[in-house]
Each structure stands twice: as structure tokens, then as C-alpha cells.
Image 1 (cartoon, rainbow, N blue to C red):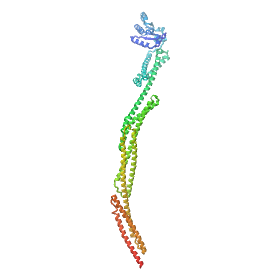
Image 2: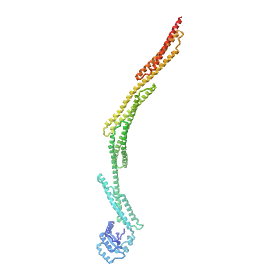
Image 3: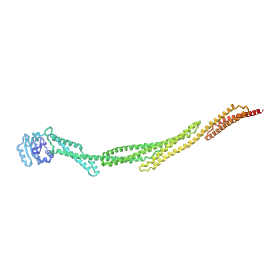
Image 4: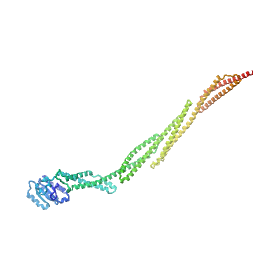
Length: 597
């Protein structure tokens, strides 16, 4: 109860009841209760109060004798509280007197109201007329809490010590194995610490503030080692728990570092393994737009797979940066090495992906330009293969202009193809710089041969078209010349017709004398010379049309129309001119004869 006798020895109360008392249970209980006080406390001795008011004498006697077996050295006085119906005084007195020497302690038989002769009232509970406040259930609950805390904390201390000591010695592998086997305590340290603090607070409050406003009492005070034990256990727990937290922190850091290292190696191994193998097998550029697009689609699938690992790289890089910012010198070198290795591999792989994408894009552009140029050449060739049958020289000029424009467009297309091809060849020549040791000579040679073959084929096709354009240009120029000759020949006929008309209508005077007639004759001869020149010019043009038609392998249209007209007009002009000359000569003769007369 916390009460003490006049020698400061603890008072132990044994209440007996009407029911049968188990001596074994009582013995165990006494052993437990007597194990609580310190050795110093035990040295002062115990005063035992055996409450036999509700029991029989035989039971009381057995209990007293049991005390001799359990704690003979610690018991100094046993007070047997007798019931109202007193036992046989002689028997009881004789029994205790008889056993006095063997018991080793004094036994007195006393009424409850006379216990104050031996013990102060303030050290007795209300059951014996004292004023000491005591709640056995409260004490029992607190004791259970104390016992539970002591048991859990002691077990926890052993576990934490095992974990902490295992992490302080041995090789790194042994440390990790020890931590893995005993890393988690059986109970939560935070919960145990909280229970201990609450228990200590309760003990200290009851120690200094008393209970329910009454006199302060302490069933588990310093003499019972409750507070010192709790405080000692708490101090040890805090120390071991702090070390344990550091072990956990180191373990967590090591685990995190190992996870990062594992993920880094996963990324590196995939990029340098399957990822590199995917790129290693993709060297072609395709032989057409469709083939290049198919390769681009395949490359996009490869990029999609790489993007998943690049996302892991970004996450790992952030984690490593966070650990580096934490400033842990121990892992600084290893973290930087991991970060550098990861960055080097990822950037190299990303560069290769970008290079491959640019190469395929250049190949697609090359094939696109080649296809456009091929279509232009096909269109030009189709135009050249169609026979020209223009109606006049203007349409021929228009067709010739269109041919020149198409040829110029082909020249520009071929120039663009050469530029795209050369750019693509330059990129292909750089493939060997990231070929992973693979001999790409065969693959590059196939690509180079294809590109050069396309450009040479386009050059040959363009040259053939140029030759055909030259032939067509010559033919069309001849046709223009043919039309021009026909037009000029028709114009010569018109001019000759006009000369004939003038000869018939205006050249009718014969002159008034010889001199005037001779002048008219001279003018007529010049007039005839002009007509002769016009006729000769027309004949030459018509002869040229015949030659051009033969060259163009076409039927002359002038021989059936213009030439007969020219000959017919010229014949009329000749007859009329001769008649004019004859009349003028006759006039000269007439005027000469007249003058003679």
C-alpha cells in the first residue's frame, strides 16, 4: 500500500477471505511483491499484516508459516488481525510461541483497532482504521502498465541493441544481412516511448500532487525504483532508438542508392543492349517515298520505346540531384559517377536517334524531289513524244516557250536533287562515328550506290529529254520558218497582183514626143525589174517551203495554191508588160518619123 512502519520498513498486507486460499498462488504473489523493493529497502525489514478477520485460524497459521519459507530474513514483525469472534487464545498463543524460534520473526495477534500501537495511523489504510489512501485497482492497473512497459522496453532494447551493434561491426555484406534479418523491431519504439512518458508523468504527478487532493502517496516511489527504472529505460530507449533511426536512415539511404544504381543499370543495359541493337539493325534509307515513310514509322516505334526509358532517366536524374543536394560526402563520388554514366549513355542514344531521324527525313526529301523530277521528266517526255501539228506560227512559238519552261524546271529540279543527294551522302558518311563497332561499309555502299544511281538516272533522262528538246526545237523553228515563207510568198503574190493592177490601170500614156516616150519606156523597164524581183522572191520562198516540207516530212501546202497564183499573175504581168513595151516602142518610132517629117 506504500505504508511504512516505525523503522521505515515497508508494510505488506495479506487480506484473507472466506473462500479457500491457494497457498501456491499466495506464495507466487508474495515472491512478486517482495521482488519490487530495492535491496536497501529490504534491509529495513517488512511488517506483515495478515488480515484474518474473514478467515480461519488454520489458514492464518499456514500463511504465517509460509512467510517463514518465503521471506524469513526480510520479515521483522507479523501482525495477525484477529476477527471479532476471537479464536481460542490459548491455542493461538501456544502455537505462535512454540514456533517463535523457528519462524525467525515476531508474531502478534491484535485487533484491527489496536494496530495503531505498532503502526502509525497515517501508514494504515481505512480497513485498519488508518488514513492512508490506497486504491488497489488503481495500483494494479499502474503496475500492469509498468510491467508491460518494462517488459516491452527491455525486449525492445535488446532488439535495438542487436540491430545497432550488428550495423556497427563486420563487413558491409554482414551488416546488410544483419539488418535484413533483424531490421524491424517487434514493437513500435514510438509507442513504447509514449507509454513510458505517460507512465513517468503519472508517477511524478502522484508523487508530488497526491491523490484526489489528499495526502500524497507513492506505491511506486523512488524506494520502489519505479521512477528511476522508467527514467533509465526511457534514457536507454531514446539512446538506442536514436542510433536505430540513424541505422534506418543509413539503410534507407543505402537502399535508395542501391535502387537508383539498379535502375541506372537497367536503363544503361537496355539502351546499350536492346536499344542499341534496334538502331544497329536500322541502316537503310529506302528506295522510294513509301519505303522511307515505312522506315520512319519503324523509327518512331523505336523512339517510343526509348522515350519510356528516357522518362526513367529524367526521374533518376532528379533523384540523384536531390541526393547530391543533401550533401552526403560519403556517396557523393558514387552518385556523380552514376549520374555521369547515365547522362553519357542517354545523351549518346538520344543523339543517335536524332541522327537517324534526320537521316530518314533527308532520305524522304531526296526521294520526294526525285519523284517530282521524275514526274516532270515524264511530262516533258510525253510532250515531246506527241507530234506537233500547230495551225500557225504563234501556236508554235507558244509551244516552244512551254518546252523551254519545262526544261528549265527540270534543270532546277535536277539541281535540287543533287543538293539533297549530296547532303544525304554527307550524313551517310558520318554513320560510322556511332556504328557500335559494326562495319557499315556494305550498308553505306548500298545507300550510296542507290543515291548516286538515282541522280545518274535522272541526269541521263534529263539529257535524253534535252536532246529531244533540241530536235523538237529545230523542227518547230523550221515550222515557224515554213509558215513565214508561206506568208511571205502569199505576200509576194499580192504585191505582184498590185503591180499588175497598176500596170493595167495607170501605165497607159505613150508620151507626146520621142523624149517623153523614151522616159516612159525607161520607167516601165524599171517597173518590170521590180515585178521580176517580186516574182523571183516569191519563187525562192516557195522553193524554200518545198525544202522545209521535205525536211519536216510534210506535204507542202504552197505548191497547190500559192505557186499557181504566182505563175498566173506573173504570166499576165509578162503579157501586159510586153504589150506595153511594144506600144511604147511603136510610139517612139511614130514620134521619130513625125519629127523627121
